[in-house]
Amino acid sequence: MRWNRTLTWLAVINVIVATAHCVDNMVFFDDYPEPEWITGPMVVDVLFLVALGLLALGVVAFRRRRRWLSVLGLTGFGLISASALGHYLYAPVSDLSLRMNALILAESLAALVLLGFVAASQARWPRVVAS
Image (cartoon, rainbow, N blue to C red):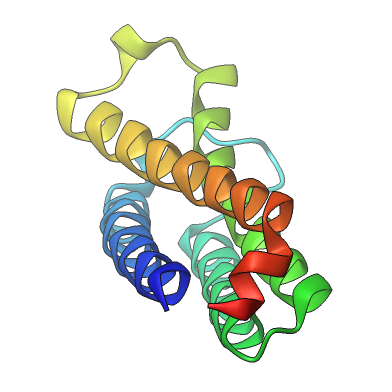
């Protein structure tokens, strides 16, 4: 039960910060440094929807005790969300506004915490399913 509650809170926090960053990235698309293959806000939107689908899959699978499906969904979401740090491959921190840096870092930090949860829950899986 404790694991499910923790995952619920982590999922809510991740949805909030990922949504905030995604909306900001779409609205201010021209201000964000992006790889060439991200040709417009619609690509950001599609990636965001795929990530949310993976998160939903991971949460539902975790609650149903589907170990590897939960790992796939939660890890997939976590990696996509943590890839927000990729903005820094295209521009230094100093070239981005405080708002942009805060959103990128918040999303990445939340994703890394979620990935830590996945690792911890898998290391203790027999106790996770017993609770």
